[in-house]
Amino acid sequence: MDEMSRIVHAHDIDRYLSALFVPGKKREHVMALYAFNAEVSRIAYHVTETQLAEIRLQFWLDTLDSIYDGAEQSHPVAQALAEAIKVGDIPKYAVMNLAKAHQFDFYSDPMPTMNDLEGYLGETQGALIKMAAMILDQDGALEAGEACGLAGVRYGLAQVLNTLPRQQRLKQCFLPGDLMHKREVDPANLAGENSEAGLGVILADMRGLAQERLHQLQRVTWTIKPVIAPAFLHVALADAYLEKARKRGRAIVTQGCELSQLRKQFLIYRAAKTQRF
Image 1 (spheres, rainbow, N blue to C red):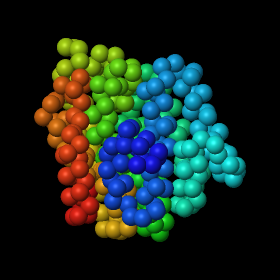
Image 2 (cartoon, helix red, strand yellow):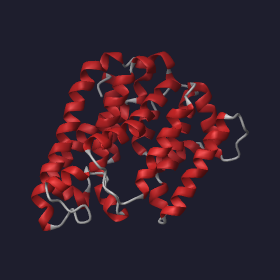
Image 3 (cartoon, one colour):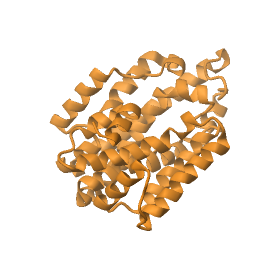
Image 4 (cartoon, helix red, strand yellow):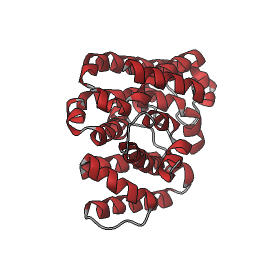
């Protein structure tokens, strides 16, 4: 296992398992993209002070500037990412926007609205699917642009629910603030008795939105050519995450809805064979 694969395996097992279905040399480029995403996504988990997190993010923004300026890279992830960007002809704004979106992760303010959450997931989860698809086949990625966005939001909503325990530890809040205000839910104490009833409604709303995006995705699945399908395979896990979240109810605040690796392997393998995400 090379260094990029090790990073993705350690920090993003869902995409690692999906990337194993990428054929040939393009697998290492997709892994490089995912490794970069892992590095940026986990800044908030490893740097406790906001100012230090901002400095770390700025390092990656400066690194992206230098990659697009054609400068030689010394950081191994940056070196691999530069090759991936070249192969996929990935535009600078897409990678920069993905990195900048994670600035939200450093602060404790709730996500303002459900629309803001969808925008965040589009710039992170959806954009990442699109960029991976570009590495696999640029024409196919262009045709499947709408599917990339819908799939990213659906998978992202499932992950927001799954990572609620970690969000509580880090004092993050990806649940929409307007909904919490309406339902009288305290973002600093989701597990509190006063938040029980309202939180249940919010969680149901989020699962409902994920289901709505699935119905929309199914209408455009025909645009996903087999050559770019590996970029979507991890999205096949969303159903299982959301069903586990439904069964656990408000307990996901402390327990999440994580799946076993064996279950993930089976679901991703099945998706690869059936092309159903």
